[in-house]
Length: 90
Image (cartoon, rainbow, N blue to C red; front, side, top):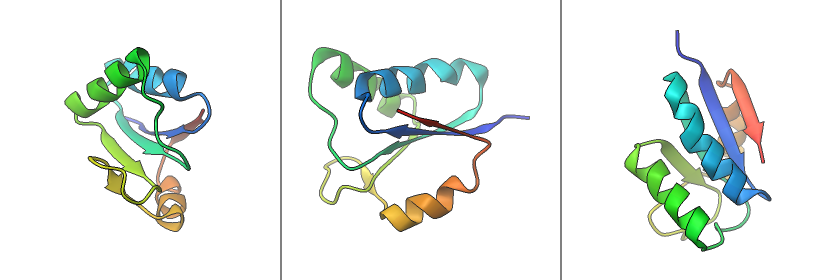
């Protein structure tokens, strides 16, 4: 049975996005939450964010107006996190 895994992207953005893509090989359910600040644009982050989108991983942020990413309030994210088997915070 697949695990449900949440990846919280904060400080170590490159590592969080890379890990999100990498753990998909286990066929678990991976959801990515970008918290408090936008992803810094650089080659590594841009490539990994594009991979997250191409792999159809659920992508959500608590930043209003973040183009191309679904907005979820911090309260909604907190409620959703109760449903996960594992939460990886970066």
